[in-house]
Image (cartoon, rainbow, N blue to C red; front, side, top):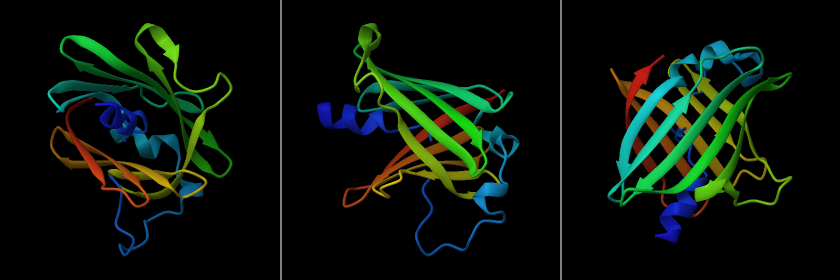
Length: 166
């Protein structure tokens, strides 16, 4: 259970493109938050007998904000607070994890950062600076959003959500 929860920690609510796919239509530094609008809204799915919820605001100012929760057996197992901030080098996904009661999982000053590395209409992939983790989002059909979590040397996890856009 802890391994599933640990894997979920890095999820966002976020589709990883294969290494050999063609380049995106725009370099990430030319992407704005408006290009990531497809993520905004309420996404709900199931995982390991529990419910996963992810909500993203529409872009406003220089950011989008998101929240995630994992519920199992009628109780929250984990929360996640996320933001995508516009920077001079393109959007960057930021996140922190919390246990029930909003007890932080990371050290107080620790924030996970994932700059956008690939984009095409309806797809976005963020990667950690050490290139060990990728988090992606992809629209796969009407009302369907997939979030993908990929760790180097581990099995890729794909989370399928029913998505209601804002």
